[in-house]
Amino acid sequence: MDWKKTETIFIIAFLILDIFLLVLFIDSRMASSPTPLVSQTLDEKLKSENITYGKIPSNPETGSYLSTEPIAFSQSDIDTLKGQKINLQNGNQRIFSFLTKPVKIDPEKYGADLAPLLKSDIFKGDKYIYWSYDKDKYEMTFNQKIDSRPVLFNTDGQIVFHLNKNNEVVSYTQTMLGDTQLFDNQDDVISGTDALEVLHQHGDLKQNSKILNTTLGYYNLVSLPSSDVYLPVWAFEVKHDKKTTFLLVNGLEGSVINTNDVQTNQVPTVGNE
Image (cartoon, rainbow, N blue to C red; front, side, top):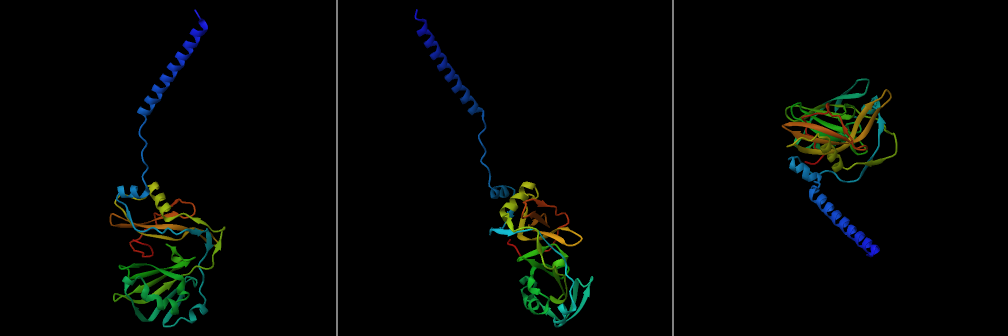
């Protein structure tokens, strides 16, 4: 018997058997493996939870941590303001003004009627932008701008106009933040869509919610003895079960900011519904 030839035949046979068993093993594993799930887009996830929203700002943005503090108004700051009686309060950090002649406005015009007054008879009024109207308190609020963005939820950079029942502005209070100092160079701010996804992943968006407005502004992160620290944030005005709440996302770090105290029934119109 040719043992060498027989040995070769056995080796070939075992190789064929090994290949056959390997093919069976692979087939069985593939058959038992679950079919990969197709990942949903953010829009699909929100739609499945009946969370609606309008246009989210998508232009590239930059920002930085910065510091600033309230200014004290001087007598020369108010001497040129006409048609009003002015008192300085709170260590001269707040103007209280009573208008000699009330100014008739239409609250539905989102503060447009107050443009002439802001331009000519309010100290640096062009540095403020319309934020909200509270019909229960008869108050219209304008927020100060930093780098063309509103300062959010801070009474240190606001003008609050007080109306009577005839929709006439009769008085106002004003506070103002001073010069800003950057902590570092300007950095990229996450997109509004990415900020919305952060909120969804964090579980802050409830089913059957409606995002009324989306605003990129500056938020007072912490108060120090010498100044206050602000950072760019995405503010989402969310309505759920007849309650309006603001949810904030750090625009630089992409983290959710605790907003337990940031709630309002006012409806800002600086975003898009």
